[in-house]
Length: 292
Image (cartoon, rainbow, N blue to C red; front, top):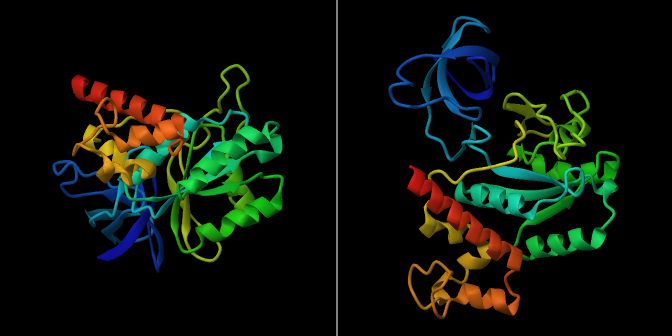
């Protein structure tokens, strides 16, 4: 029996890597009964007679896991958002940040396609807001090699997931980091304003200097399944630091008197778009709870 990490899952097979190489495995045991599905990133126990005929027997405890993309034991998330084609979406970025914060994953905001940017003032305003919240913000373009090199040090010795809306250039960025990958990319649909899905599965890709990056299927929406309304403000750093200043314990920052969060919005210390997104996410969570 050996131990390794699942680096790819495709068509019912799990590709497990350890110091002896990569082994193609199927799942075996009582995973279905225990409602456990092996994920890319899992550390597992497996047995294999050869490189193409193995079985995953046990999944070790996970540090974290994401549902979409389906991956576990991630250390940081590179959230790729284009400045144009498709247009920058603050609400989608905030939704990604909430999910990453909830899973205790370090987020890095990567603004792609800066070579297409015409209105630098608006993007600069957003950059300042998120940097002031403590988030790393990196500007990139596959046509500006110095921007690609500025991203590379963040990836070394880490397990990083590249995630973001379809068409923002995740696969193109990975190809620029490692031209040998030849990951499939596609043009933005002019009629829909979004990209076609080019990544069909999740895979951990080794990078120079050690570490892995995951290219993941693109998607344009996230749900809040499993998230509680009482916890949402904890995933907004600017709210988290003010919770103890609210008059009422368990303040939801909507209609309660002497709410430190709403006071900070009114004074401009909390960005209005962030607070508006918080309220929308709160409504989405409540709506989901009613449905289930």
